[in-house]
Every structure is written in C-alpha cells, then in structure tokens.
Image (cartoon, rainbow, N blue to C red; front, side, top):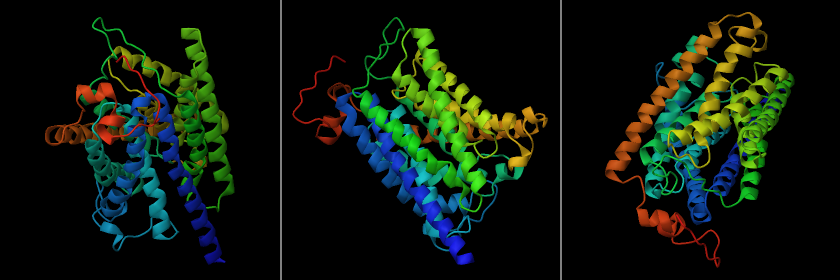
Length: 415
C-alpha cells in the first residue's frame, strides 16, 4: 500500500512539473505578444534557451546549493545530483524535475523586462548564473532548511522565491540596460510602444493561468491531503479572476477604456500574489489579495514610466511588486489552523508572522538586487549587455538570429 501511495504522489508531482514546464510557453507567448514583431523571434529564443540553461545549471550546481546539506546560507552536497537526497517522499528525479521547472520560471521572468535590446550571449550567461547560484541560494533559505525557514517564514509556492526574485532581477537588469530607443522624449514624456499581437499575449496568459494549477496545487507534493489541494486550487483561481477584474476597472476609470493588456497583467498579478499564501488562507482572503494585486500592478506600471524605467511587459510590476505583496499578505490573512506558524494580523496574531514575512522578503530582494547587479555589470564589462543602436532599430530577429518571426512580410518601423 505504501508503494502505491508513493507512486501516486510521484505521478502527481510529475504532472504538476509538466504543467509548470508548459508555463514556459505561456511566458513566451505573453512576451512575444507584448513586444514588436521585429523582436518576436529573439524573445522566443530566449525563453526556449533559458529553460535549457536553467536545466543545466540547476542539475550541475543549483540543486546542491538549494537542497544539499550545508548551513543556513546554502547547501554544499549533491553536485550533479551525486549523492543527493529528495526533498520529499518521492523519487529524487521527480522532485528534481519539479524544482527545475520552478527554477526555469524564475529565470524566464527577466526576459520580458529586458526585451528588445539585450544581447543574446549575455542572456545565456545570465540565465545559467541565476539558475545555478542566485535562485538556489534564496530557495535554500526558504525551502532547503535555511535561515528563513528557521524563523518560520512561509512561502508555499514561491511568491518570493520565484516571483519577487525574478521581478527584482528584471528591474535591476532593466535599469542597467536603460530604456529602448524612442521610449521617452526629451521633455520626459513617455511614448507607448505597442506590442504586435494581443491575441498571442492573451493565449500566453491563459496558458500561464492553466499552468498555475500545477505551480500552486502541485507544491503540496502529495495527493494525500485532498482538502489542501482543493483549497490551493480555488484560491489560485479566485485571486487571478479578481486581479483581472480590478486591474480592468482601475485602468477603465483612469483612462476611459477597459484595456485588455492591463486586465491580463492584473490576472497574472493576482496569480503571483496568491502563490505564497494559497495554502494558508480562505477563499475570501484570496479574492482580496488578488484584487489588491490587480490594483497594484496598474499603479506600478505608471510609476515605472514616470521613473523612466522601461519594462516592456511589466515584469517587475507583475512579479516583483506582487511577489512582495503576496508574501506579506500571509502575515495579514494567514491562519495557524491551516499550517502557518502564527496567526496573521486579521486572526488576532498581531504582527509576529507579518514581521517574519517582512524580514524574509526584504532580505531576498536585497540579496537578489546586489547579486544580479554584480552579474549584469560583469557581463556588461566582459561580453556586453546591449545591442548596437543599428541592431535595435532594425530588430533583434535579424541582428541576433538572421531570421524573422514572420517571413515574407515587410515590417516597417519608425523607431
């Protein structure tokens, strides 16, 4: 009987891993749709190759750093999975594949924020290093028995470990790269650079929403607790729905039109925000968390534009801002009865859990900002980070890859 249960758990985790892997396609479609046609092939190549690089980096070094025996900062055993142990009661290889899919998701977030002007070789180096070193260190702190786990920090499926990490890396990279040519005028005003395919982006959002049902419920790592799986699933869905609704309403009220692109980013914001607390909250709380996430993403996009930080797909507003919000929300709406160390503020637990969440997310964001700042600066010095002005104007599809996403169509550009 025990073998049957272990087999069912293994199949469940593998199916969840496959769903999380399919999110790579979702990221690719969203990012390709939100940028210009002349760069679509480039962004898809980055999405494709960063999962390849993430798989290699996480196999060689990342898993050992994240789940190996070590200290509160990082692990030091299990390089290339040699002598490594599974972090759950399932086979090592199944657990590794699930965790590698998460690692790939964190890595690919950055592609959107640095889209349309980053050199392809530089991106390959970045994606290997974040997967092999940066992501696993933060993952060890939270999920590998590190110092944040010892404090009682909670992040069920990765609002901080995956999303705040990826969003922060995207923000740092975007600031170092600088804005795209033609994005901002001399008087400080911003020009809208429209994406070339809203239908493609819409498909990507639906794929991501679908994949999130592997991302969050799959993090149970077992089929044994059906109530937990169901609660995580409904919380995931409701947060996405309310995020989309509230983002649409806010942008409709502010600008007079119910903008689809912002509604889609609102749904993604809700998904990101609920990823950490989904196991520890009731559905009504998931709705509030998602709604606030939808509002936050609208204002975060506006603020970045005012600061002249050019994030073409909203990587930091969606993943960074809402990864932070979702992590802190545990300290407000989380319940000890649902597996949390302390009750949240709403349930009379005071600020105990909130303070732990705040310490964790601040530490992770600062570490990632410093580490990725160093990595991007080193890449810039030795390889180069940004393409030439001529390549950027012509399009990275031709300049970097020698082909077009839409062959036989003449694409005219003014910027």
